[in-house]
Structure formats: structure tokens, C-alpha cells
Image (cartoon, rainbow, N blue to C red; front, side, top):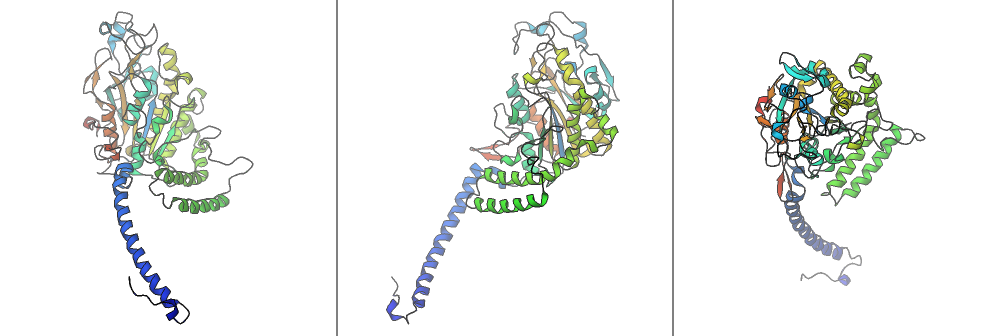
Length: 488
């Protein structure tokens, strides 16, 4: 132990003693702190690879993007391909007869019935000559901007897993959705809006609810923000009560104080992504208080645009309002907008087991009218070149009857389509058999669709990964190939 001067040998002030003792203590503390800090950093780095994954890892884009934004239109319940886009004359010829493939077959909810022709007539549209039924007639004017995928297949004929598979790439709930992956990889284009916004059907949320737009193992800041255009409170808990109106000066001061308190609370908790996401959500909510109302005020649109989307017609206005809001969000830099057609079964969706004509007729016209308006509006504003529009559903429906007027679930062959940034206009991929039952040419999965979507945004679906629970997770699981035939 070093010889230190005794306190009595000093001039009474004790300064020399204190300085030397504190100096020795400080050196020991410095070495201990540095050594512990280096070890802690190494430990944190190792743990972060396992638990936080790629939140700090280089993301994307990995190559030159063809598009920068996405609008996904999701028809919940299983829209019927053979009543919308996949025309098969054999269904008309054999209507009411025994369906030959149906022998010894058990469907999701029934035994196969007789061949069931579509109650809607089909005709060809555009230079591409694509078939579209009366149910979706407004989309006939847009077929030369669309590439159809007639040979979609799914692993399941059950709604919730099928929707999860199409939305997240996994049958079981809890995986990040496509919108969350894109938010994580590319971030926000606007400081006033999140990267990912969800516009549910006016009738309510779809089967599976928030699982379809959740963030899973990513930070919760990447999950979709639910917005209800036209609702009394389009974004829940955003604005103060009427008796305390929004004051931007006061709210700005409050947010500044909260920011300081949040930063103090975060110290020592840097690895808790929930805390970071909550802080980011509060900051964003503060900005949305000023930016949300102007965007969602659709009355500022010219009358001819409101009429284009059907806002002057009550039977079309709900879905049309969502489509117009989506276009306004794309203009203001929202990266991924998800529009839903149909709500959970009790509220009404595309799950037409009992009366196909009645149930599809309720959702078909507003969907087709609003979607066609959206495509035309994006195109005339020059936004379609940089925006991918993806139209999808979890599976299709059978060409035979269930009971006498319905159709059961069909995961063996159904239709999706894409349009816009980087997509070949007027194209088509794959086909089903003569019954519109089973995909027989160039089979496509949801994994392939997601791989193609990411590719259009400049992202490699095999490289966009997050380490979680010992595995590198990705949107396409361990599957998927880019569909080159869809690319311009």
C-alpha cells in the first residue's frame, strides 16, 4: 500500500491528502469503469444480435427501386376469381350439372355441389383483351395498366391463417406484416405521417384484426396506424375533448417537456424498443394533431374528383372515401397504405357461402368503382409510376355450388393483380384449369408476390432479415421468387 502523508502532517487544510487519495481512487474507478464498459458493450452487441435483431443493421434499398410507395387493397373473406376476372365458358355450358372433379372431395364447409355459372356476364376490355365481369366493370377501363396473376395458390382454406399468410408470410399470427417490413426497411417519407397506415372497411375490422398489420418482432413503431376517414374520430385518442380545443403553442410546450422527461426515463433502458416506439408514437401523435385533419378533409377536393370516387353516392361512398384518402396519403409521403374491403363475417365480407349473388353484389360495386377511380387518379397525377397497387385476397372460391347459390373456399387457384411502379402494363401470369378450380400454369404463392413487391422497392427479400429467437426472420420465410414476368 503506498505511503500516504498522515492528516496531522499537513498544514491543517487536508488538501494534499484529499487530492492524492481521490486521485488514486479516480484512477481505479476509471479503469474499473472502462473495463466494465467495454465488457458491457460487447455483451450488449452479442445480446442485440439475438434479441433486437437488425434494428441497428443496414437495411435498404439494396438496389435502384422502381417504386417508392405501395397501396394494398385487401378483400377479406375470399373473393371469387370466377365471378370477377377468371372467365371460364365451361361453367356456363355445364351449369347445374355434376362437377366431375368433385367426386370423393371434401371442401372447407361442404361437399361439392353442381357446376355454378357466374350470375354476372363477362366481356373483354382494352388492348390486352382481359376478361372482367359486370360485377367489377369499372375496372375494365383499367386493365391495360394492370398485370393479372391468375394462378395464385395458398397453403390453407381457413380465413384467419390465410389472411395472415397473405399479409405477413406466416400462417400463425405474430409475424411482421408486409407494411411493417417496408416501414422498417425504408422508413418514413414524411415527418408528419407514419410510414404505414391502415384504412379498414367502414363496417369494421377484418378477421384477425391488427394481426394483419402488426409489427411482430420488429419495433412496434412499424405497425400500421388505423385511420377511419369520414368517422367522427378518424384516429382514436388523437385530439383533445371539445371543451379543450387544440392549441399548437401550448401543445408544443407540453411536448417539449414530455420529450425531456422521456429522455431521462430512457437512460439505462436503451435496449427496450417498446419505450422507443412509445416515445416515437407520442411525438408523431403531436404532429398528427396538426396534419391529420387537413389531409382527411376530403371536402377540399374538387367536385369532379369527389364524384369520380363515388362520394356523391351513398352505396359507393364508404370504400371510395378510403381510396381518395389513400391517394392523399401517397401525395403526403405515406410509404404503405392498406385499404380493406369487407369486415369480419358478422359485419359482411366476401365469404359468400350462402348467397353469392347477394353477398358479392353488396361489396363488388363499391370496391370496383373506388379502385378504378384510384388507378385513374394516380395515373393522371403521375403518381402511378412510383406507386405499386396490389389487389389481393386470402384465397378464391369454388366453381361448384355450396347449397344452391353459394361457393365454398378455394385455395387451389385464384386471382390477384398488380399495377403501377415497375409493373408490366396489360400483362398476365399463369392460368387455372377449365373450371377455374386449380392453378395449372406458373403457380404463384404469396411469398412470390411479396418477393416481387420488395424487389420493386429496391429490396432483396432474402437479405431483408431480422435476427429473432435464433433465426433470421424475413417476410418470405424461406420461400419466394421474384415474378419476372410481372416486371416492365
